[in-house]
Image (tube, rainbow over all chains, first blue to last red; front, side, top):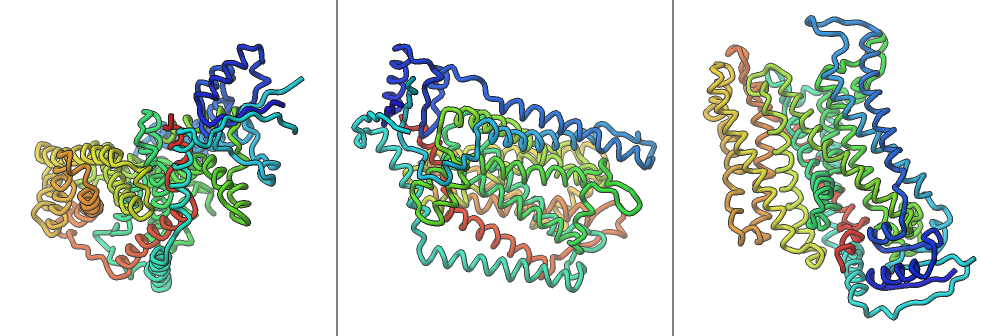
Length: 141
Length: 445
């Protein structure tokens, strides 16, 4: 594996472009950077993160729970008060919104752990650190 | 794994030097607490134990009647403090989430401190409903579960909405705070030894900044910001509906939700200034917290002050225009009755004191900003006092009118909460980076 280390984002990007032009495939390149480099993501044609799906599913479950749970509890023991409907959609919307955010946020976090393969136990116990430099690793056949 | 390494000679590269300076400035601020610092931690810790835990313990032992709340004012300063601390908590997520979505650069100076402030302030807020309950160990009655008669909680009640809103806010604030910290915790691994290194390493979840990690991390952070921004609006709207859904004069208005949200952002900005101005000086963070960023925060505070001032005026006018004697009666009572000093104190602190911030020179004067922020904190506490206490003290029937005086136990618990807040904030400033290092590095070209 070839390793290239740069101190500036500019040099790092320059090398990345050079490697791609020389025929190295994006999937053969691994990078480690001290902060996100959005242009590099575009250059390496990174796929969209699946964290979106985790958050979406969590959010939908939250909305469903927020409406269904209060409705079912209201129907479980009907208490009619003030000629109001037993199942009140407007007040349950508040619960549904809060649970959408709660479930969406928590499942998004779970999504990060799954998609980014964290916690990385090997890294935690090793001396491997988060660098303050821009690193490019090119896999060799 | 074997590497063929090539490296640029780089230690002297200006970008690398700038990044290293940011890292060192923030981390050195964490590692050098003096005797004064530990003295303050001890003092606030003691204050928390004595004033909060001691007084709360006494109240549990003797009964909730030890406080001053009674008919007609059943919601005393416990609820005032609850609303105040929820309000304080709001600016943290506002600065973090909303400014992130707007790609505002001054965010990076304050977002970490503001997020920590949010988490601690929600903890403070969360204590008050339990303290107010009296028999705090029955707090689980608030949670939705079937009781012995198989009855469920009333999901149509704003108080039940509040349980969901505040607990969601606490959870999401903690997640947002922690996710933002992950890369910085990995940086701390490089700077620490022994047990600390293991703890920071474990907390950073093995972060090394690979392209896969950044891609997924950025997506989650944007999504959390997108979820948290409307959450800020919803939580304080729900808190306002605790009042506005009731028929009590002075509470039953549709203006309450936006009025409370603006007030929360206003008080939150003030608290961020109260905390960050001394922190910048004490921890020598002038380099990473430039004065221009304080100026922008001051502008936000000035803008929200005007919204709050508008709300004070318009609710008075609406009460007059409604022709409802009870509604206008309460507003006249607020301005001229028993609690007039609190009312005019609120107007002075929140409407008048921030006005000089129209002058650029004063917005850039940190001493002026600090003093203004203290006035705003006091003013926003008074606002909650005026809304809650005056309305309950002066409802419909003159025979049922009354006055409320907070007693020693209530005042003690209030002082204890402030001690808890500063105690926790000082610990945060010692153990975690007070400025988002990674985001600051991103600004380096």
